[in-house]
Amino acid sequence: MLRIDQITLREIRLPLREPFRISSGVVDERRIALLELVDADGVTAWSECVAGEQPNYSSETIDTAWHAITEWVAPRVLGRPFTEAREIFPVLERDFRGHLMAKAAVEMGAWIVAAERLGASLANLLGGTRSQIATGISLGIQRSPETLVERARQALALGYRKVKIKIQPGADLAYVGAVRAALGPTAPLMADANNAYTIADAEHLARLDPLELMMIEQPFAFDDLVQHAELQRRLTTPICLDESITSVDRARDMAALGSGRIINIKPGRVGGFTASLAIHDFCETKGIPVWCGGMLESGIGRACNVALASLRNFTKPGDVSPSARYWERDIVTPEWTMNADGMVRVPLDRPGLGVDVDTDRVDDLTVRVATLTAPSRAGAARV
Ligand code: OSB
Ligand code: MG
Image 1 (cartoon, rainbow, N blue to C red):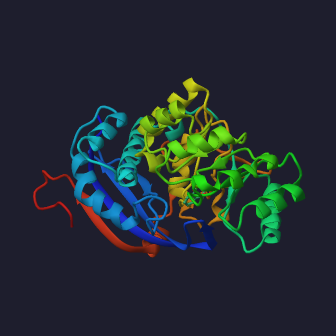
Image 2: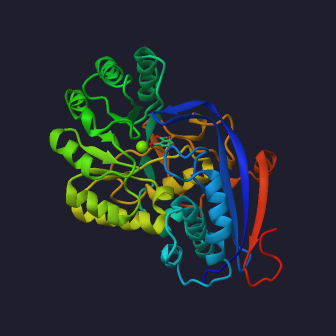
């Protein structure tokens, strides 16, 4: 039995070591919602909500997620007995549209509680088997092609197995071309546009084809599949979808329409682990490779991504950089590290997340707290 009786919601502020710029916005300090869940037997687990500060990636933000978790997500889960964590997502989807990052924060937390209860690693509970995962870096938009080349060169020297270059009109062909020219024809490069283009740019984007990128991620609108299909017909480079894939149904649509050939799975974007597994399994049957994306998570969300990326069909390097790429100091011990071969170890030998949360540091970074309890516990709801 799995019954979550209390969720403590916290907001922490965690400054990035350097601003991260994508086509739709820039962030220099993360505002991160963390959840601490307690079950009926006092077993606890931490989870993280990946919603950003601004609604520039999806419509959700930390503030909408805070509201959704408090008002609608937590009340559906708190005090309710489940046999398995995978029963939770359908309960959260019934007559409740959107708010997938808010749902995911609670749903993933429940999976972690379940892993703790079983004494299993989160990776094993999800069905993961790899003991280490291949890692890529996501490089924000830089001031000049020269700066980008330098950053990409450093990344490969550190062992990264994939270099993702953020692009936008005015910072695309010349930037990616400079990196390809400097680092050679076999460097594992890709580009991510975060919706910066429209179908009118199809010919322009086709000029990326000769650069032999591993893939081009989400060039068009955050919810588009049809225009991506038209572009994919005109490109030899595979399109990878990120923002557009919000459910296994959208993954099916992608396959049916030919909107892309690769999927970036972010568990927060799709409502949690149950939906991620469904997309993973569907893609495996269709021969569609998947990889695990990132949302500049702290070490808690990173643990979730590492666990998920240990599954079979995560066959391309994930955006699962080590802690030091983002933070002066992470909020978990040990911090996430990467070896010289660009691999991150999956903590299969430890129950749950596989890292300890540095609770003193979380307390120091906390700017607001809410304690949510089962509605039946009269008077205790929402302190
Ligand atoms: O599009 O993958 C993206 C970060 C924030 C929002 C969107 C994206 C990203 C990244 C960062 O690319 C990946 C990481 O966490 O390192
Ligand atoms: Mg992306």
